[in-house]
Amino acid sequence: MHNTMPKILLVVMALLTVLETSGSISGIVASSDQDWTSSPSIALSGAEIKLLDSATLEIAKRTSTDSSGAFHFDDVKPGGYFVTINEKGMFRERVAAVSVKSGQEANIGKQNLRLSQIISVFTPLDENGKFPGHRRRS
Figure 1 (tube, rainbow, N blue to C red):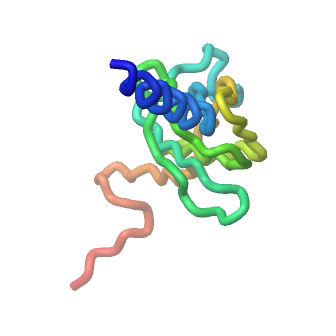
Figure 2 (cartoon, rainbow, N blue to C red):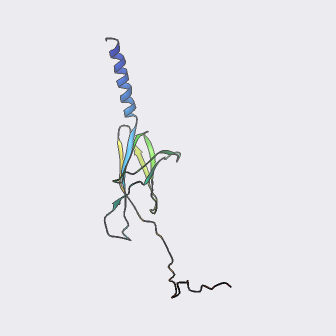
Figure 3 (cartoon, rainbow, N blue to C red):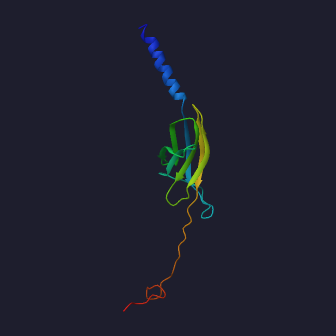
């Protein structure tokens, strides 16, 4: 019993060292577009979130938002990162200069994505259900 106590103490110290050498990043993603509606923002479930190393621009981690629009990256090495948010039909947002420190959480808060502008040309049909100028080929 006397010999096992130092071993257990070393294991506990090693675990504490590992826990303190990483941090985390969290945030919430919602849709909001004041040009289209005055309603409050809506949580975006399933939005793709990528964590890019700011020095190399390589993807360090990826996840997606949960049903409340929240995301969380655990075990992030200390340093600088970019968080990219991508959802179909929305503009992509990049949050720059997210800094992660050992044992701390970097919360980027609520990120509101705007709807992409969709431009469509509507050409009404004539009384015969044809496009104006439509000619029948012989």
